[in-house]
Length: 185
Ligand code: HEM
Ligand code: HEM
Image: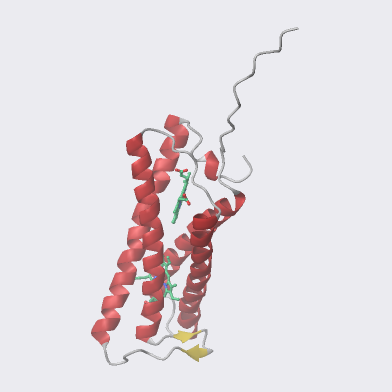
């Protein structure tokens, strides 16, 4: 009897990001959005203890995001994998540039946030005061504050473009790119 012809090997392509990457991605998206909204509304909080607490919540979430961000980078470099690109070479390049720009902007905003607290010498939850780097230097305080605000706005704009691209993939191209980043699908 003749042996059956050998079948070509079945290539199983990963359709989804790993669960750790998915969790880190959505925790980042939620924290960045919360931080931006709180940052923009701090000035509307009543002056005094409430405003200090509200600003301190911003700092606490910011430091939490710093931990998430470092974990994300380590995971991305050692364990996490990008999925094979969907679309042509130009789309792949655009996606890569936007993803790395988002990492860079989030990292920059976090560092500028920490620097902001340091140059201002902020009170944290009315528990302790961070010693100001150069208390009389108002120009430096304004400069760092402006850069922090600018970087935060830039994340929001780029993340908006990035989210619009994800929705375009999902509803127009119907290629499963968004599903790859969603849990339990
Ligand atoms: C990606 C992370 C972050 C985002 C998106 C963000 C966003 C913002 C925004 C939108 C503002 C208001 C800026 C303005 O229009 O004047 C702000 C202010 C501020 N942020 Fe952040 N921030 C982040 C991380 C941090 C971190 C890590 C810290 C420090 C631990 C921090 C400390 C501050 C402080 C002290 C202010 C000034 C508050 C005030 O004016 O009373 N931020 N942030
Ligand atoms: C502040 C908000 C956000 C940030 C900072 C962010 C950041 C990122 C980064 C850095 C990656 C690359 C992941 C990697 O390869 O390791 C990524 C991938 C992805 N993000 Fe976001 N993201 C945000 C919001 C969103 C939203 C709102 C959506 C959906 C509407 C979304 C959908 C996706 C998808 C589908 C991918 C996978 C893309 C691919 O495989 O080419 N993201 N995001």
